[in-house]
Image (tube, rainbow, N blue to C red; front, side, top):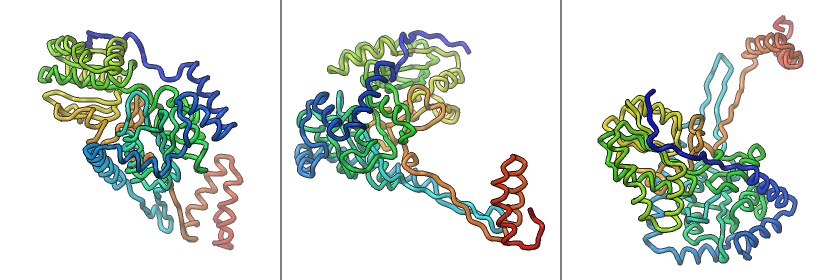
Length: 429
């Protein structure tokens, strides 16, 4: 492979330093021991919030009164598309039962998780879209109880976030963010319903809390800083490519933005435009994008389309855009990404906000082995089995022989006892 780094990242994103792990571990232990009082204590200390943990019906109604009709329409626009896509995902997997041999049936059942905890960031940005992505998808899956939380200010969570959470069907909304919000959902504080899965993006403390609790509860994925990669050739529009890279770099100072291209002209053009696009951002996005592009941005020049596909699959970006004359070829060829955006006409922003696919996606190479949040994450795919007595004649004898071969006499005897009962006098053991 002949590739050239025209711009190489100086740093690698990290989400779980030893300092972060210690802080999170201590907070989780104190909240588990101290319960609701400890969680509220952290809310007072870290967010300056002195109210009740559970957002009341009055607060929900007041939040709705502060949200403009246009924003309500936009939230509904996003909700409709996310829900429709989630419904199609759910329809793509079915319960079934099939006869494997005479008298032996095996099946698959889909059982929704009982309680889901949905974290919605509310710090640097008010992530209304994250409420839709996590809560609406959980409700389509059939989750019985959805607990949602978001970091408050002195008056509670952002009203638009509260409105979106309620519209999407959250059963309980908590005015808690950060580690204390994750802990409250995981331990069932204020609800008596411990979350069986925790989902949603967050800062490094939220990500570390989810990582620490994994196993005790399920999580959507181990999340790191937001990433974007763009595959582009000489047909791409440099201005659009630069704008799209910047649009994701504004997420935070450690958000990687990568361009893979076969065109030196495009690479130079994009490189020359980046700072201008960044400088036109308002603060704090401008500072975040400046640092992200300086420390984590890369432009990689390749000789061929195949090389671009190979390097892209190695990076396994969270978001991957394709701007080429061979978009269909790349769509068929590419294997590792969180979500794919094909052609100039779409962009990560559309998926992030309202077009329908989920924006809670794998980062830091996790796209090598998993996709993003989907309705399937909220469903347990379990198996069932039933059989006739006659089917035991064949299955029981085979199971007993395999068990004894493995040295597991107890297993063998559980087959023998049935053979003796169902077929007395026959030598089947």
